Picture 1 (cartoon, rainbow, N blue to C red):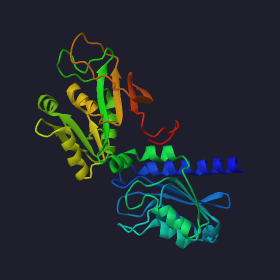
Picture 2: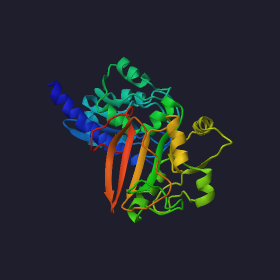
Picture 3: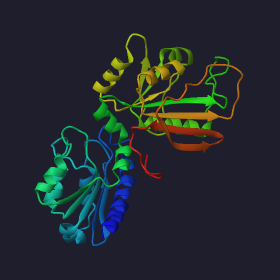
Picture 4: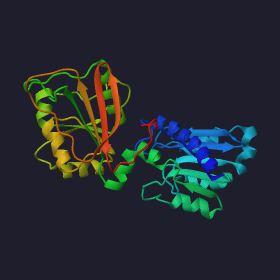
Length: 322
C-alpha cells in the first residue's frame, strides 16, 4: 500500500511541476508553484502561480473546481510543489484556504526557504487536523525553484556562467571577437535571458564588443544589464544585486570575468556552447572548475550546448521541468 501511495503521489506531483513551470516569467520574484486537487481518483482542480501579486497556485486550483465537484473536497488530497504560505503578503495565507476548504490531506513537494514560511504552513495544516506528507519529488521541486532557493539561502543571486567556444577551446579568433552561436542557439540564449533577472559582462567586453544583452530573438523582459569593474569588488557587487532583489544572474563576460567568479566559488550553473569551428590562436576558454556535474547536453544546428551544475545542487531525475 505504501509503494502504491508513493507512486500515486509522485504522479500528481509531476503534474504540479508541469503546471508550475508555466510561471517562469510571470511569477518572479515569487517562486513557481503548481497545485493539483485529486478526489474520487481523478483531478478535480489544478492551477499554478501565474503572476506575482495575483492568486497563488492553490487559489487558482480551487477556483477551477466545478460546482458539481465541490462536495468532493472534504475527501480530497491537494498536491502542491512548494509549502503553502502561512503569512499575509499581497494575498492571504494559502494554508488558511486549505483549512477552510476542509480537505483531507495535503502533499507538499518541498519546504519554502522564505523566512516567513519555513515549515509554518505545514505546522498550521497539521494543527488543523489535516494529514500532511512532505518531500515527494523534493529534489525536482527544489531544482525548479533553484533561483529562489539560492537567493534566500545564500543571500546572493543564482549565478549561471555562460560562454561559447570553438571545437578546440578558444572563445575568439586571434583575440578578435567572433560569432559562434547559430540561429537556433542564439534564440535559446535569448530565451535564457528572458528567464533570468540580470546579465553581467566585464568592462573590457562591454567596451570592445558593445553587446546589446537583450531578448530580441525571444519574447519576454530584458534582463538588467550589469558591468563588472575594478571599482566594485565582486562580493560587493553580488551583495548589491541581492539587496536589489535580483534572484538570478547570467555571466557572459570573457575568460577573466568567468575565472573571477570561479575563484570565489560564486557559481551555480555553467552553460557552454561549442561550435564546430577550429581556430589557430586566440583567448582560451575558461577551464571547468572542480565540482561540476553534467546535467544536460543538447545538439542544435551542429552546435552543442552542455550544461553543468554544482554538485551541491538538487539532483532531479531526467525529464523534470527546468
